[in-house]
Length: 242
Image (cartoon, rainbow, N blue to C red):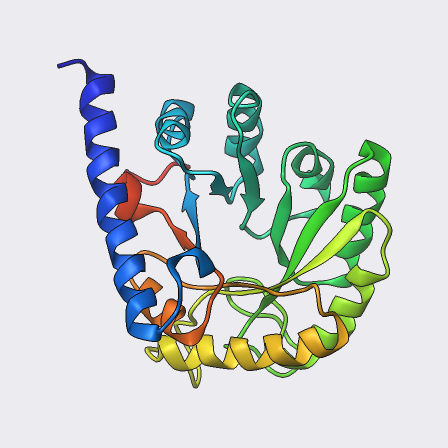
């Protein structure tokens, strides 16, 4: 067996197991499997893995570092994929990210909105934006892993919606490690759903709710997430790069 065959078999088995977890979680929550989109987080994994995933029917992949993502997206430009950027994004990387990302899930400050809009217009693209909500932050503060506090969501969402070249897609969060929601993933995701309900009253099309990862996707599905971001459970554990 070649390395590629072995890797394909490994990813196929892992992906099937994750699909089963999502299906069971949907059934338990009384939701249709089609209500939840799997995004495979391909950070630190090679373009060859992205090709395997595409061949297995995966259509959404995510990256968190532009220096890894940009060459990988270029190498896989022939594949029918939607690319999500999920990491903390510095404004000096925005031009590169706008070149390949269909959605930026980590929008958490006005300066970033302005930069994304400028580059999207320049590139003639429409970029979807999710507001990253930090449930470990003060009302208008920032979280340890990026994100804006609950009190800053409405203003930032309005700014995205009013910026040419950008489309307000919805909300994203990472289960917090500190604060009131530490160790309470489902409660955190339910809070995000409440915020989504408020957001959709003002912006009906902003209906994406991105929450849950390999360890807590069931809680995210139970809370109502529309998208789950899974890396390790599909691709395995690799040594951190950099």
